[in-house]
Amino acid sequence: MADSGQAPSAVPDVLAPGLLVVFCGINPGRFSDSANAHFANPRNDFWRLLHQAGFTPRLFEPAEQFELLRLRVGVTNAAYRTTPGSGDLRAGDFEGSAERLETLARAFRPRVIAFVGKEAYRGPFRDRPEHGLQRRRLGETSLFVLPSTSPANAAVPWAERLQWFNALRELVSAEA
Image (cartoon, rainbow, N blue to C red; front, side, top):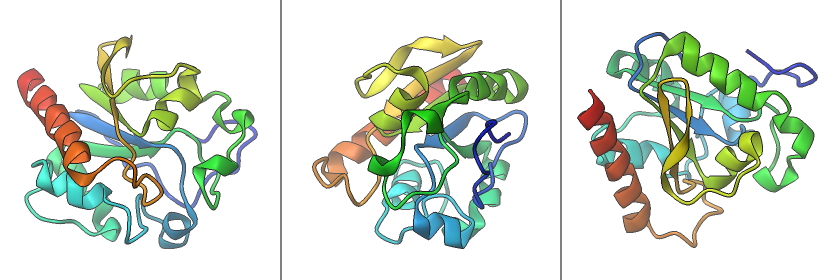
């Protein structure tokens, strides 16, 4: 599902029909690219937050990302180009990403696409979101913005990030 004009990342989409939620990161970093796995930087809190919020029964390693499908959880990125940091992305890296996410929503029909960070949402849609449930929908799929789990996002404390992951879990459970 790579956008035209972008080289696909080594990090594969983790997608299947019938998902409850798809987590959408901004783009693969170097740790993720070399591990061929989402959120692979050991300092990234994604996998710990996923577990603490009850999306997984135990702490998963990035290499176990396809095990998420059994739990009806998927993962993708807004942009496919690997960069040292999200600040290295250009507007062109998001070309076609809104359409790709809409196609993903229609094809796989997740209840929610959860953007891991405001920039993961802003890149495709060019809007400045607040955290939480968004007004915009993609077909029947709700959109939710979480704080970034990147180690570069130290400004948002763990407890606040966990609060948003818990709110997402409640939303997904209510819709199930």
